[in-house]
Length: 184
Image (tube, rainbow, N blue to C red; front, side, top):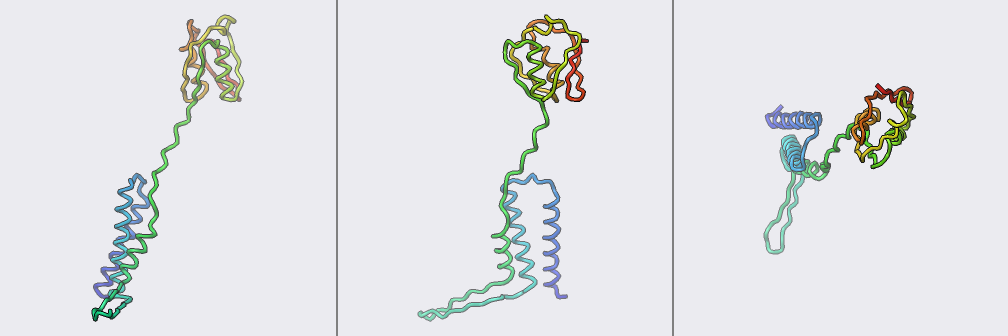
């Protein structure tokens, strides 16, 4: 093999390794980095094609009426450079990761503890059972409150912080779609 073929082989190996690394690394590229990657890929492919062919693949010469000569010639390297440059895909903003699974609910002013618990459970598509509560405890009015938790059970526990009067401690258990609110 001639030295030009070894150089061409080096450029081909370099571009393959470069593209493999670019493909397998986590995509955090920006639009400018994409432009640089496009140029480097085109340049390496152009050099590889140019070193493999070595000389011009086409020549065009034209004698002008003024007596001057005009000529155009091209190599596979230029052809590969422009081919890769023009067909290289566009950059698009990476998709943001999905938000974590959360349960959010807005409880309006004036609902009772029982009504608010039923609103939360209905949003979670379940049923609710109150154990050990007295009637007046279920009728405690709540302020407007924004609930945010891992799930509906955690949101139900946070309901007590919106009460005008102190609510007793309670636990929330979930089994088969039924939320059991147990006075502790």
